[in-house]
Image (cartoon, rainbow, N blue to C red; front, top):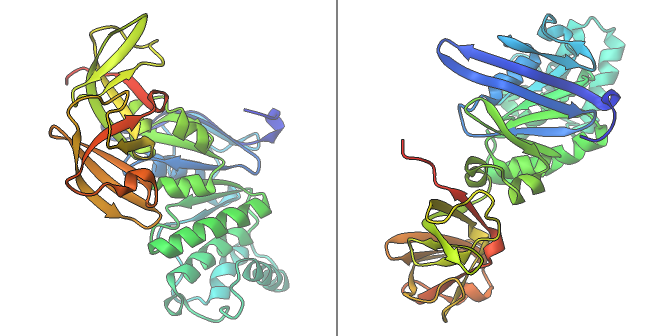
Length: 365
């Protein structure tokens, strides 16, 4: 963590939350710097929304504490935390116009009418909602409703903005457009932001750092590049990106170790600190790190595989290779060397060993 403690907006320490016998959040620790954008990324049910609701004040924590700019939040109600929140369904009031929805929180704070009008006009211009001030939510598109929800949250000038799957209701193209727009906007404003999402592309587009969650725990947190290139567990590796999982066993190879995969590949081990000879392991290799060859390669000398699937995906081509009943999927440039192979072709796999992750196999349940 860079910077002094005065740059920390949010500090979460040892926060836990259970619902009956279910531990939704387990010993969560998190710091968010002022102006930083952090994504809580994980599958449904991993605890990310519960943690966000604890930060917002909609849920209380069973243990631990959290501080916003040095002030404990445990006994502060949601409406006094000066935190803006945008929900998945936007939660717009159907009977209020765009201007009415945006100014609602300002009215609750008993701001003078003139100041409310000025603040509404400011965020209307910021979110490009000009001309829509008099429309009701039912008269707005999904993207426009999303902008109104964000404008309403920003109008009160919060210390922090929380986004709970705020873009998931949009169709793919609009969602990706809004990810870029939102990332640019929030950086321009310099507002500290936490976004909950299950979409890794969204997390990578928006966040400065990503906290990957599973079973109520933050397993790893870091910049997108570090999460992707240096995963600390098999869960992070499999959840972030598209990884093939091959199974094999370690064997002696000169002065080091090699992995003999069940599917016929042999890979030298570049980092054997966690491995022992003769042990079962899992080999993880990302779909974009695989190439195909018509000739044997250093990792695949015998028994070529067969292309069982070849699909044009636009900028990329997805191919599946059958290696004796085990499927390996690769995603490469649609105009790349591997793209020339089609269904039925006999091919060899080529992988740079340093691009593979080899971890001890999990013990049987």
